[in-house]
Image 1 (spheres, chains in turn cyan, blue):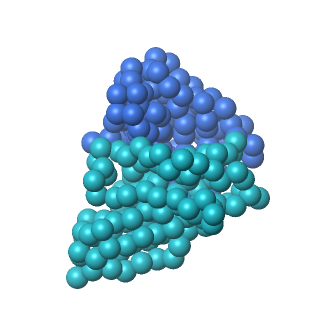
Image 2 (cartoon, chains in turn cyan, red; image 1 turned 90 degrees about the horizontal axis):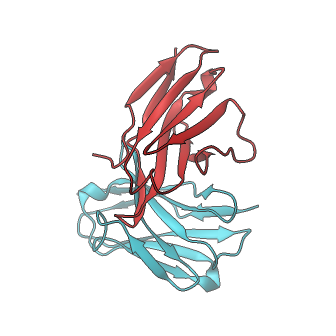
Length: 115
Length: 110
């Protein structure tokens, strides 16, 4: 079964750093992009960008460029989304998604940033 | 303001047919395939229609998609209560070099 499993919910303070993860299984992890999608409370889906785990090449949406960083570790089939300095406006649900012949989404990671 | 434009809401009664529109431009819908996603309350999005009009395995044939020039539509026939969800269109945008979503349409089954 093709699966993406994301790390658990996080509660952080403004200015703190954070890394959330997305582990793939059941497919060739290094072959297909991992996309990251943000959904702010009560709002729509926003594509943040993607990483190709095979060579760690990235595309960032202009809206997120410079504020987040994507990375991947092939050895443990895991992609990461990293913030160096969180803001309250980063409070959202974050999804990872891939399509190795079928569209697969992670279950989502809730990030809450509050002082 | 989303790059792809969708109506915020649509509604219908059980058994009825409803459509959801998605309007874009030459750099996205006009040049690339369009996908539709369904997001049930409290769950991750699910691919409903891919490549403009193709249903992934397991998606009922009550759902259909079409594309014309820079616009697309999702049609749901034989509306059921379990279809109540948010629906999003998405396409690659060549100018932005990224994926763009519509703002989403909330379907209410009356």
